[in-house]
Image (tube, rainbow, N blue to C red):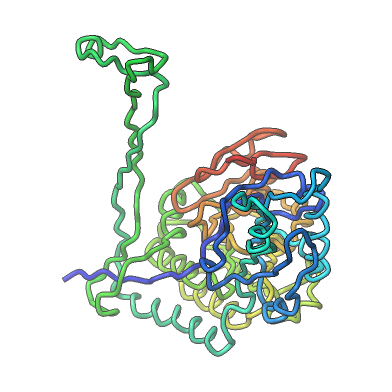
Length: 454
């Protein structure tokens, strides 16, 4: 009897408010704010904290609050204020500028960190000073843990990958893919006559008219292959459950046939363990069907102290040409075991350069990367001479880390999510736009940014 084996992957969601790259206070102050009647601070999430201010003031009243969150990675910053003014000469941008200066005093590197999403929100409900003073003023900081788990728990998670792989070694024989069709409606720009006879003749109008004609919609169907199920002949995991994010397996299933003579470079830090398992499962099933047996695993420094990490010399890089699956598995496990750094950045490009040196006969690189993690060593990008195909893990919220778009664009590669294969990045030039997951990105001064209003 076949049984379904499940591996549940739990990840936080990225927000898609604005471009996730380093910014300046001046640029932030020029952005158009969002609006809301009144912010309800009781609705805050568990991974958020407040830095509060008085109405019409810039001083952070609870700066010590931040001390409890210094080991967290800032993911999103939102500034809330009211639009009520005490005088016509008041300049909101000047006050907001002082508030941003106060934030920088508290978090000195806040504007140089990539991967932070910024938003200003104006509250419009206050009509007098007394009411405005009751509204929340200040920053809402959304964070992500830098130290995801303690070392003991991390080792347990690492071992679980090996245990899971061992358990399915002799039982898994296929990845089942199903064609799933989604439909959506798109307005044609025309209106349908209320008169049935005219409508059947194909007559359409440009305007709704006084008769309030209904819009004409086209139904667009999109079919994709879903590979969320691992099948086995024994119930090793006792039935298990559904894979929530099977990004690696799906992208490999869709693309490996065309990725000939590629080397695979994989982030094996703690947050990536479920994706590492997917890679190993896929390789176990397809090892003798592909010539991609050149690997580099990286863990950002082998637990090196963060202050000692230097671009291009971070280490924690494990290359292996695997003549058999076991060689790949053991090297991957070694890289996982020796890792455990606490900062969010990863040395992706250092690892790719190692692959470029070790495997001169490989014509492209497949980078399995964490969408949450800023790339530590973007300065090395100019040294990469072959296309990089990025499999991006953790894109459930739709936002794409723009650094990975730049890597693919400048190397002539591509970016792949659980649903999309973005293959035309190399063809894009300055000013060009592309929509991914409902968000529009544009190349400005050689870098990708999110276009406001997308």
